[in-house]
Image 1 (tube, rainbow, N blue to C red):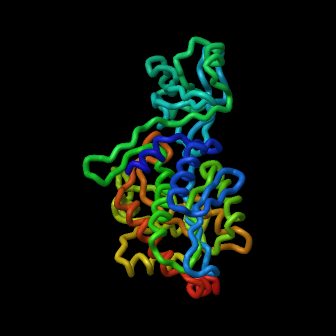
Image 2: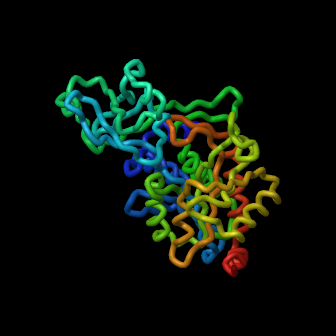
Length: 353
């Protein structure tokens, strides 16, 4: 879990993914895989199999996490901010954050008017983000400037990594989507000792949380035949949730519908076949909201069969989240088994719709 801890505790807001990129590059280099990059920051390792003309398989997490950007510095030294990615205002108040400058990282707290002085109407509504601020303990605007904090600096949540007492539940920030980054690296490492008939690209894109932007450019450097977005899904195994929906610890999550894509049915069925043949537990997710990089991957050029393989996660798009270690392990196992069986013949059967 040391690698996942490092990935989650590093900061990487959309557009500011360099720290995550550097970890990905280091780990890809350890495997001896060839590095593949686009010009936005997405990075992948290329693992060639036994057939030089075999299918090209893209396995992609995304490096960015939801965060904020400093949008204004008040005369009294408080920071106004805007979201980078989707946030619900109710999860923000009194949370600690990091402000990353060119030379130093500062700690602040998200503040608002004290509840003691709120009007009855204000108390009964979700406090709007535009009225919140970040308090960094500065005396005034000049001191903020002296410290080197500027409009445009990224702001990230703070949450240390922890493996919970049951030995399986992981609590950390940015599991959306360092879990996908971790899985891509895990698969790439395992593939070094496994025979397979294709070329596999394992890595991660940038700027997913602000519009699937890295997913638009990355395919052009690899031209994959199939693509799998490695992401997280919404777990509903909490009070008030739907007991029939995704749960922690019950296997990888295959998304059959989201707002960005309906997966290729042949590819979807192949994933299920592989899972069942190898006794790998899996779950199915159908969700009308949200989307992943697969929403752009499947529209590349003439279209490529794509699907989302993820893990159920609680509390995403907040300062902390939870996933299952066993789900991560089974996700990697499912992907490895898929890579073993997806050859030219099977690919052609998928493409003949």
